[in-house]
Image 1 (cartoon, rainbow, N blue to C red):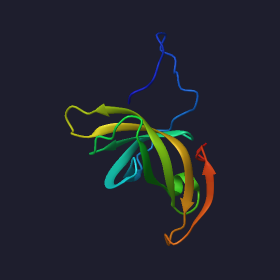
Image 2 (image 1 turned 30 degrees about the vertical axis):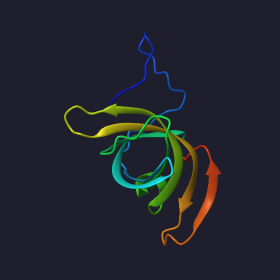
Image 3 (image 1 turned 45 degrees about the vertical axis):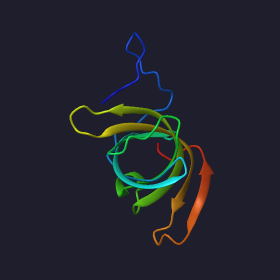
Length: 128
């Protein structure tokens, strides 16, 4: 796992990240429709890092959906559609996948029937 630390080895991030391997579907990249399947490496209330086959560009706008499992929601799984900005892309030398870090700009919970969404909010995901 990659961490952001200062010269003394202290964590630089202000928001705690949780190492969760969750399914992620990237559906848009800078306005263009894409369909890339990914898996998260870690998630926080303000961002996500996921492994993806597609090399997304830094500073590009993306839309992605992540499904929070029962262990996180304490109820049934919930899909969350997010709009964000790619802040970092790292290539994985051996696996052909890219680690994509994205800031979450806004999100909405998606109803299980996909016909309606509810509770839309800017900014932070409700992850402890």
